[in-house]
Length: 146
Length: 118
Image (cartoon, one colour):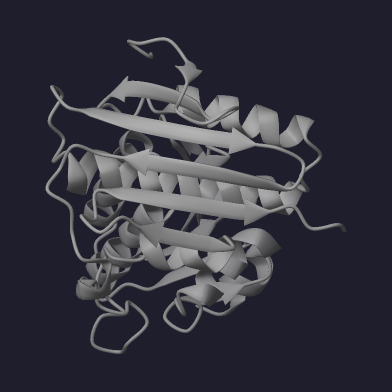
């Protein structure tokens, strides 16, 4: 569960949740974001995309960023409105260079069990951007009429 | 007679182990690790056997779950068995297509077609 309350971030209607570095705790922001997405009229496919991307981003933050360290935290900032959903997932790790992750569809990497999370996020969302340090990812999906 | 584990339902049909998932969402690490452990026990018990994974009840699949399937495929084939997949819904099949794993796995529309292909 969250160890700190939901509160507004620096921008109007941007919410921030800080959870312990624990995948069970990460379910709370996911549930809140998906509830807001459904209430804001996003399609089933869009909600699926947000869920998938959030799972990937949170898993990367937990496993690769925070190195499974239970003393660390994951910060989630988000804003959901009828036009778009914006989410930032920030870990406390040293960051990484996203371009250094090999293309998992290349024949030499296709049978590797890891390295597909970023690709899936990019395939499902309108924008996936990493911070310069590489420890924060900003996810955007635009609400498209059916 | 079907065998029910925590995460899987397993039944045998003419030497093929048909496995169905209890979870609708195969996303988080704990769930994936438990499925992998249960599947590895099955692979050990049925050394050289064929396994059919039915995704009928599965609605979500993460990249970590894809990784688990790749590891599983390698283990089954390492023991001269075969792995086939069936009943993958369109949203999840899209995940396979994006990652091009639809070319790596043998995927069939339903259990009957998959069974006949072993």
